[in-house]
Length: 79
Length: 333
Image 1 (tube, rainbow over the protein chains, first blue to last red):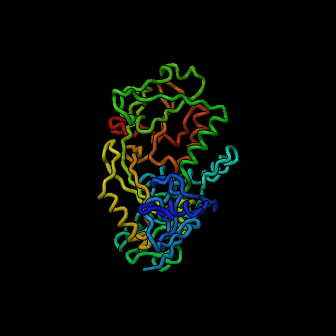
Image 2: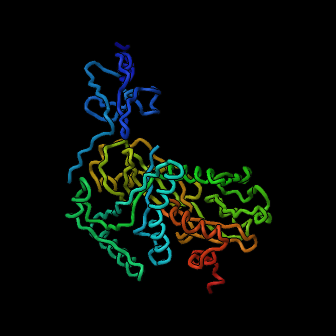
């Protein structure tokens, strides 16, 4: 548990996870680092949206936080 | 940090066949340069040459592009210029998720892209490992920053340049305009601002570079090729950023889902006619100047063609057309 107003990244760390994403090219494990929106090492898929900076998003009850596995997938369709 | 910059051939040198040829020669040298840099320094410059496309929106743009490509072909003479105008139907097989406004594209096999930061790093490291020596100097503060200063403190006096027994190149970017005069050279370069938008990282989705849109090996997509005459001002302007974003989304509507994580403005080193300037000082033989806005595209020519000329102490006659003498109106009259 984390206090109200804590970030999604803080919640992930408090839950004991030591990795939140895998890097795009080499697939290395990464955990939240700077906790202030600079380093982009805390990227996660939050409520279905990829590449969110979890340290910049306030955690809420029921929020779904998934690991960001490498770069975001796109599904381009001809319009 | 991941950046992708074009090695771009297809639109360079309309009305200046010697520049078209120089750019093509550089693209040809790029593969050897990338291989040599990686072998000598271990730094990969991520050079790829899958050919490149310029997207056209609407019928007028595709007609104008076709006319430009045909002029380039005619001007290339015996050297040849392969291009194709790709219609929308075929283009949908080449690129993912085109917007309805895309009418077609021009394609040439010569275009490619690379990581310019790795290129710069590799060139510096290779230079140092081959006993090269850099002497740094900065323009005096009281004359303003960013190379505007008319006073450059040289590491040693211009007249002693030759005595150093090492040919020297002025490498001051926009500062060359002031620095070149110290050597009796002319390098009338001016700043031309460009703005760039950078998206979050996405899986590889663009198989080839596009004039205004390219994806790095790490996945970020870089947007923009704006040109603004704004002096030495490097501030960003929302109106220009909007134009870049709007055209990108018209080209690929799926780009609207990607977040912009960075944006910046920077200054090109632009000669008056857009063509590079190469000269050797007549007053101080051994001092050379090279100026261009397309330092990455022309890196192949500079490393493998221009540098050997400098080492030999004379520029080839084919570079005479790229001398600053072309700006001397009295000589041309």
